[in-house]
Amino acid sequence: MATNTNTKFKDDTDTLIVTDTYCSLIVWNDEVNTFDWVIETLMAVCGHSTEQAEQCAVIIDSKGKYAVKQGRYDILKPQCDAITERGINATIEVIAN
Image 1 (cartoon, rainbow, N blue to C red):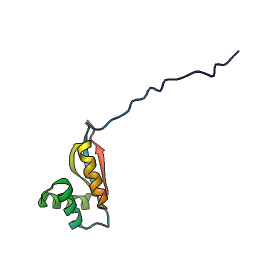
Image 2: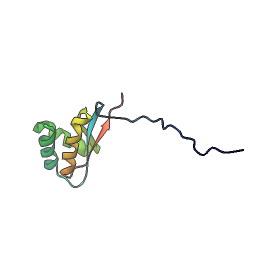
Image 3: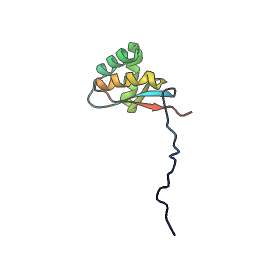
Image 4: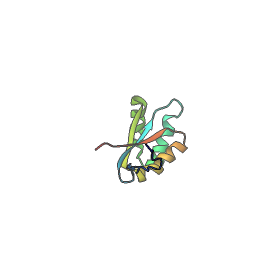
C-alpha cells in the first residue's frame, strides 16, 4: 500500500482584531511610584481632573489595580504606552460582552 506524503491541509483559523473592541486601560499598583507621580501621569496622559486622578490613585493603591479609562483599543493603546514609558505598570483588557 502506497502512502501519499504530499497531502496539504488548509489552516482554518480566525484572527482576532481588537481595534473596534471596547477595552479597559488598567493601571497596576507598585511599591515604586509615588501617588503624586501616578496622579500627574493620569492627568497628563488620560486627561483626568485632579480629583479624578486622586480617586484613581487611591483605588489603585487599595485594590492593586484599577480601570482608569475605557474605550476602543486604538485609542487606549497609545495612552497605555505613555503610562508605561513613565515607569507605571499598565495593561489593556478586553471587556467581555
